[in-house]
Length: 318
Image (cartoon, rainbow, N blue to C red; front, side, top):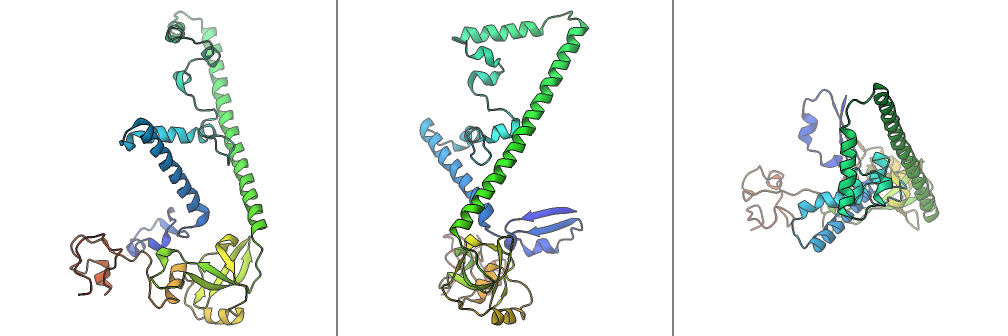
């Protein structure tokens, strides 16, 4: 089997599901999952800020040229989650900077005072490597020493990665404990409020969906609305309990039993909205939306302000 993993499963084009890929299994993930997307957005924000600083320092607008410097700077920065820099977690040693990056012995770097000292060390290393008629015994000893060095480096890399994984587990447990102290556990039957992302609701639609907790498993909550069960389970930080139980558990379960399939959050928002669906339904046409190749026209819907920028459009109210 081959896996095609999409973290934004709701946006996968329906055509993909119709393709005859016998050895492909599509795995749909939860869109905009806070546990994963937040870290990506923070990392992107850090890169953006570092790039802006680099452009200011170098007085250059050629930001693509600065990406390699920003990448290296970020990779050698200390990461509190893994207890070391990403570079050290990958290669088992700190990143080398300056003269250390050209392969000079560590014990000789501290004694360098001028450029001539560097040239002398490099020339000395070159002369040692050019020696001829070295006895076979010396070659064997050198080979053994090199193999031991390689094994030691492999062990350092393995130790660094195992320690990083252990530190990540400790960080995850710490976050869970912090979350448990901040949020009280909810019982089955509690009415909760689930926020709807802006991209999933139409204008004039409610900002939240009311649901009932039907199951608690591994600190994840299974929710059910009056329109049906929600597909995904939610963490405690994603839902807010209502002061009163506005929905009756048995009534909600009875009405949800009539639903054909579980709903995504967007589908639940659409059912509860008198304005219909919004989400990412928009077109990016550049041909004035004259034909049914326009997603809006083919759906018998006029274009809105989020469609195709400021380009001219003929699929609007006269």
